[in-house]
Length: 246
Ligand code: HEM
Image (cartoon, rainbow, N blue to C red; front, top):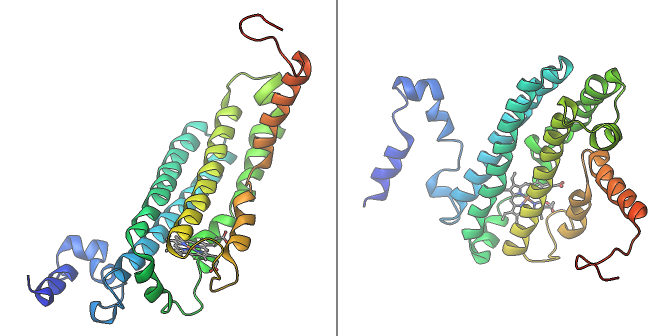
């Protein structure tokens, strides 16, 4: 196949309504020109990052809606929109694996071209890091405080699987999937640049491990520990075996 011919076709004419509405001409020229790529993996490297940015844009935009619906206590809307957020997060996590099809050798060539660029500068990631606290605030004000509820009550002493509980679990899912992104990203680093290699900004393991420990909503995780500890204290640490033997 003649490369030049197909390269030209990939960009499209940009004149049809579909192309105009979706701005495909611009979209498809957001990647480096084929002739400037350092190798055949660089296009994928750029596209995966760009797609991840688009998912994060959609997630951030949806979280703004979720925040408004939290303030209105419109639980059905909150849950439907969280489903969208969670799906986009799952796609983000899965799509990182595309970059595991890139050889470490080829990645070394791409790396030289990144300048001082780093994922830490990702606009999508940065905005998400600014959104979880306001979200929690809206949840706490409208689902808990206003109704005299607490996390302890909705999970344990007054557990009824009500709206506040269902929304809390959607928040926990968001938190967990974010953690999973960080974990999958770490695995990708092991696969491409290796464990504890020096990165553009220092030692990635140290930079990233702190993030991997971060919980957006620590109260939602602490309640589980408290319930388990309470249960252990009530029934004693050592229990009878299921066969009835001591
Ligand atoms: C082979 C592929 C990749 C490698 C080797 C890699 C490597 C790294 C390294 C070493 C860091 C630590 C900071 C630094 O030293 O620059 C980092 C941070 C980061 N990367 Fe990647 N990355 C890759 C792909 C991606 C992709 C596809 C995304 C998608 C958005 C991404 C998003 C991020 C983010 C958001 C951070 C900051 C994380 C935080 O501060 O907790 N990376 N990356």
